[in-house]
Image (cartoon, rainbow, N blue to C red; front, side, top):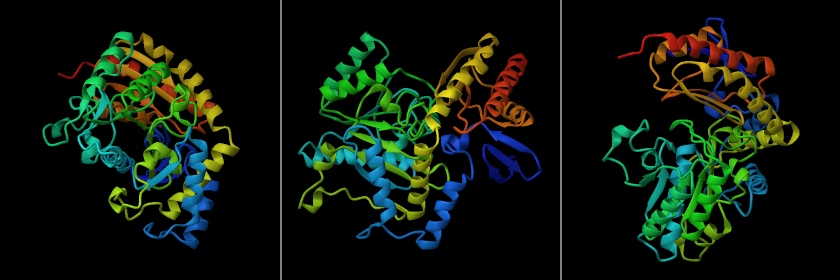
Length: 402
């Protein structure tokens, strides 16, 4: 049965039966400052009293304008044209529409398909689903019902990078863009790749005039140790999708941000060149207030240092898992720790074991992982790490499920 959570506080979930759990997942990467941070709560209260919502059609408002300016200032290069939307999946859908229409506005109507990577996860709406790994993702059941995209392994050496380059050259007249989760693939399997690989992929896209779209819904806002993962590869993608921790996990909101080059293809007196997409809750003022307050905290408090401290802590805490039977890899990047196993069985029992240890961890696929709030203390992180080692060690001794 689902856990009944009564209230949240800092890194803790308080259950209705009186138990208290450390949230080792930060509500799926989003609660970067922990729960109920007073600065974010106060900002939302003030906005709620003034203007909780107004449509963003023929109307604008200062919370959205200020947030757009601040995001543009923080993002690298000329990623400064911000489109606000409701959720991460919608941000991906918007990026897909922008990429296709970018080429159509320039007279290239055949560039309608995308390339994504094995183990990718980009969302749960139908367009976003088509970008996920067609064989290993949770959306594999929809084979044949989704848009058909190219899906290839992430190139990791010179030979595979050359094959990737050749593929782009072969299909560039059909490709609208390449989608990638920079450095860390999330719900598709928690796979990592290096900044050098990301940089090479970006160069291949530039060489073939294929748009590069960075899905930083999970990695953005400090999770990998820098504010945005793309910074570590020193690249400027054509589009970037942001969400989850954008509002500190307090309320749903996302954004798709484009470069000037992409925006210029839409800037015209011809109305047919405009992007026709207008979510009802686009640029919701309450969400904008939460996001603005979250950015304040990244400026005022040492979140990126905390992410790097978590990286060092998890590297040490999870190291004993390398000696456990059935563990095939242990990897850490920023505030992300992953124990990969040969195959994951007894999942419900495993999750219950973590709860008994006072930690919320939800193993999936072939991974036992943690993405804690960036404000987690060393003692709390130690409890998470010890629980992962202890529970994994016990799990490895259980009979395999047939």
